[in-house]
Length: 344
Image (cartoon, rainbow, N blue to C red; front, side, top):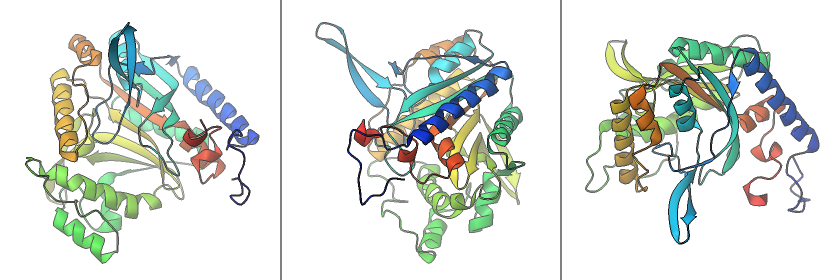
């Protein structure tokens, strides 16, 4: 990390040349890993009329002049998910991509507006196969032995004593007060003139306590993959009902990889039902409106493609800069980026 007492000129990269060489080597290793297992590398658009609809992610809109004085709003992609799934509908069986992704407002120690994403999909992989593949890749990259696999519930309960799927906002607020965890006063408050679900109110509380209390302890000795996330984190994952300690609740078939307290990857057993997909998008836009965010397009070519049938599959997205950070024990994402947003 450069010495802040002697800042470098803005025209120079923030990453050292050895770190850039390490990134080059990592990209070669990742490509080799997937090619050896029969995956096809693909390239899909960075700029599209479609975009992933997510409560918290903000795609960057771009106004494109199609013909003189006629403009179309497109989006820099937060993930290549939609186009890659369209390739699965077209007959592709195992595909991967290393691409740039963009998320508005993403600044911080581990965040940059533009970053490198590795994303892959394979048809016929179920939930367990998707977790196993991610674990195998993790073992290859980190050489720390095995990978712990545990449920979101077990880790959350271990560190907080609460069931994240059913605990009330009031109990979580008291826990935060008792442990001096700051939170916005808006947490747990129903937005004016909005009809929202209990999960809508519970979600930010669980996310806060997970980030403050649980996540820093994940993957410290060995990498850990968490699975069975809260139902409100389903996005485009399948769901199922589970019973734990006499409580019954729904979970999303989503899994995430953590190393040294850093989230590196997240995956889904992918939702293939077109009508359920449409309902998820509509519900997400209702939540975005309640949060005060603009709605995102509810129609997409992926919806059209799913009418033809998206085959059962599993998909995973992995942040490459974060991966390199953990491999190099870097503290800031700027240490592995040549030109972060402030120098781009």
